[in-house]
Length: 88
Image: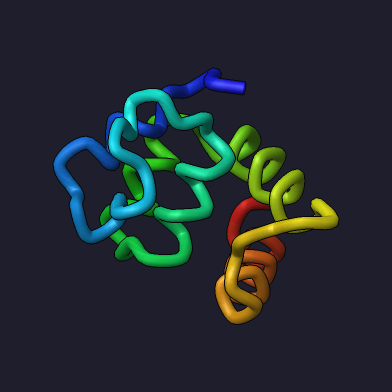
């Protein structure tokens, strides 16, 4: 499901990409999980610029409500609250 190619954000960020030898081949879901779990606010703002608010919400909720997610519970909670307060 590589729609936005968020993996470009991981290309020079070894602190966010230690799990894949070639981040350019990652789909958007694992890339978004890595950025939200381990990135900073600047990384998040880049995601919003690339995807837009509505598409970010759709992908986030698809990940967050998946039976198997890698989002840390505090990250899932924070961005759920952020979306409800700021991206409606």
